[in-house]
Image (cartoon, rainbow, N blue to C red; front, top):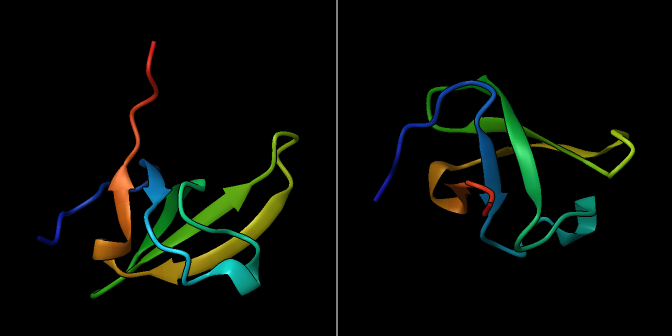
Length: 68
């Protein structure tokens, strides 16, 4: 099921496909660009330093809603 995500949505990666780029399953990032068949997602550390900026397909991310 492909879902549409808005720009700047907080998402969670659900694959280990990008371990070489420094992010794996469970990494939290933000959508910074939308393409025809992909999203550009930026993943940062706790200090806001970018770890990775990668294009992912919609089926590799889910919307992340933090628990209260």
